[in-house]
Length: 246
Image (cartoon, rainbow, N blue to C red):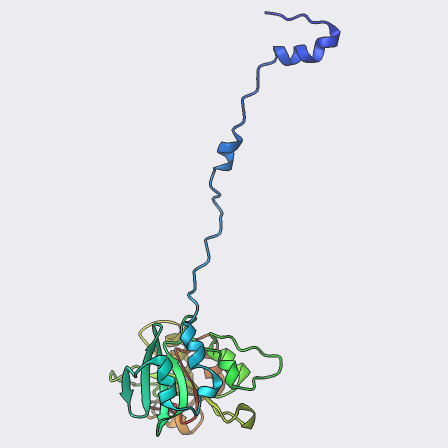
């Protein structure tokens, strides 16, 4: 059928004679899921509130009896070390004659941590992360790397790599002990293997297998490079800390 309209109604006529446009479904379009949406960031549980009280700087030198009003009784006692379970974290306290020499965490992580920098006078302009790598600690404080074993370690216990820093008067003579046990996999194993291999290449297998590196050249530059991005799992601060070889 043909349509005839006066000129004044031409616009309306064109609209009337044209096929109606398909309706748009804006609501449906808005419900199409985005295929490139970024995944939600992982939820990190903040440290237990008790840890802030336990790791106050003035706890060093205080009485164990005072600390145990916060922690409760020790879970285990090994020599001078006491182990406490607090908010799912393992707190280690070294004490002599009932007074606290050092304190730290075994299983150091974002949820089991403390502000390490509060115990030390770090380099000007440098902020020490709450969950640092060995590289962060080395840059902010310094220290010397050590290892209980680098070659032919046996099966009695996992070898342990440590970073030990001796505090100066500016640090109130507070020392640092950071460590990681070398397991069957993970970034620490690669760093450990490379450090040992480069020491063997430089000094020979017997030098490394018999532990001579502990009193001689231990290739500190190699250890610092290898462990720069590895995070310690044990961090302790204070005095009378364990040595590199336990």
